[in-house]
Image (cartoon, rainbow, N blue to C red):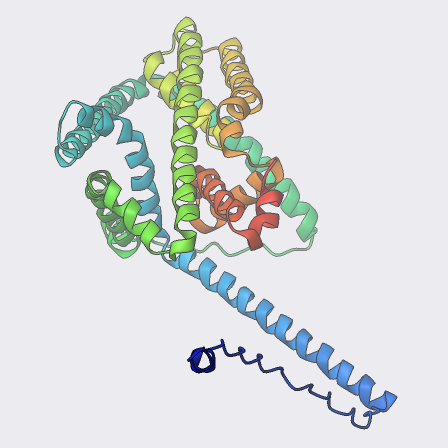
Length: 397
């Protein structure tokens, strides 16, 4: 019985060993391929030539893109200038809209109120300027004798220089030119032929500015989100920061210019008032803010006080006006402007000068006004793109 139980006792079966992988013999090396030196040199030369062609094609594409961009900026300058001016005005009115929004005023209504304030200020400035221009025109005949004498003296000197120059160039045996009289059409026909189209385009563009400003202010959040959504998800944070930095830079640029313009206007108005120039506050504001225009600002700032001082200023007064405007312009451009505006834009003088030259060629006088914020925004974009950071560093201080 015990033997039967012992015979029926079960013993655990040994676990099967894991299958061991069979050793794989590495393939036997084949015969070595020996490339002749001439063939290897030809292959290397073809490789370098291929890379050179790729680089040349890339540079050609970049050049074509740059030329196309310049063409767009040049031929579409009127709508682009209108859009840029509306954008700057929207940044100026943004604090007002935000303040109204804190008082629980809907953003659309706040934008409408801000645009109404803008139109009212522009209408008041136009009315004031028109009245001052009419008053100046009424008083101008009193000083017509002095103006005619001054113009006649300048014309006589110019005619003498022209006659002496023509005598030297033509020689003693030169024949006298036959005078030809060219009759021009009336001013109305000339306006219809040349000026009506340009003037009409400008009026049409200006009429769009209030509407553009309103929609930029009322749809600001939507435009910001939609702009960021245009980029892939991995780049949206960078795009958000870039747009934010551009907005901060433009707002700081505008505030700095307004502060500097107010300071120069107050100083100029006080000096003009002491000299007895009529409407000194009005002329001082024009001269102070005109002085902020790069390169042309000095000339534009001198003309209003000299025109307003006709019949009032003597030679000493003229020297004081020119000296005051010159000193104010130099202090503004070399002390106030770099501290209040340049530190926020962070552009080096060479980049600013080249930008002013380029945008003045593309957009004329408005290019001088819009060049710095455009290049400042471009630098911010370059700083946030890895491949373009060297260009941003070149534009920076």
